[in-house]
Amino acid sequence: SDHNLPEVKEYLYKILVIGDLGTGKTSIIKRYVNNVFSMHYKSTIGVDFALKVLQWSPDTVVRLQLWDIAGQERFGNMTKVYYKEALGALVVYDVTRPSTFDGVTKWKNDLDQKVSLPEAWGGGSIPVVLMGNKCDLLKDGYSNKSESEMIKYCEENGFVKWFDTSAKENHNVDEAARYLVSQILEIE
Ligand code: GTP
Ligand code: MG
Image 1 (cartoon, rainbow, N blue to C red):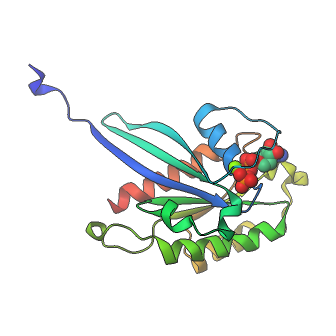
Image 2 (image 1 turned 90 degrees about the horizontal axis):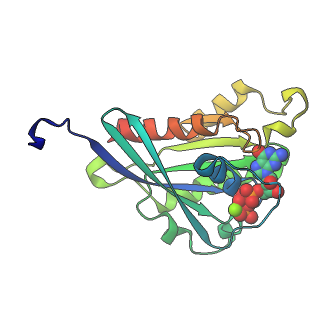
C-alpha cells in the first residue's frame, strides 16, 4: 500500500515582480524559469505569468506563480487587482539608472497600501526582496551605493534583503528568489 510513503509538502505561492520600466523584470523571470536571456527589449503590457517549480527539500515542493507586472502599471490603476493574495514580491531597479531606484520607494508604498499577508498568518506586510539589476554593466563592480548603505536602506524601508543581480550573466537571480521563499516559509 501507499501507507508508508513519506508525506510530501506542497506549497503554491503567488509572487509579484515589480519595478520601473525596463529594469529587467521579464529578463529576470526568463533567466530564472527558462535559463535564457535576450538583449531584445519587448515591454510587458499589463501582466504576464510564469511558473517555477522548486524542489525545496526532499519532502517539500514549492510552486511559484510569478506575476510579471509591466513597469508602466505604476501609473495605471490595476495594481490592486494584480497584488491580490500575493505572498511575496521582488522589486527590481536598474543600477545604471538612478531614477529607477527612486521608483523603488514608490512601488514599496504601493504594495504596503494594497496587499498584506493573510489574517491566518497574522496579517502585516508581505516579504519584499530588492534587486539591483544589470550589475554586469557597472565598471569593476562600481556602484554609487555601497553594500552597507543598501543594508541600511532595506532596514529603514522594510525590505528583507538586497541583492545585486544580472539577468544577463545569471548573477544572484536564484539566490534572491530562494531568499524570498525562505522568508515566506518562515512566516507560514
Ligand atoms: P517592462 O516590461 O517594460 O516594465 O520592462 P522589464 O522590467 O520587464 O525589462 P526587460 O526584462 O524587458 O529588460 C529591458 C532591457 O534591459 C532589455 O533590453 C534587456 O535585455 C535588458 N536587460 C535586462 N536585464 C539585464 C541585465 O542584467 N544586464 C543587461 N546588460 N541588460 C539587461
Ligand atoms: Mg517586462
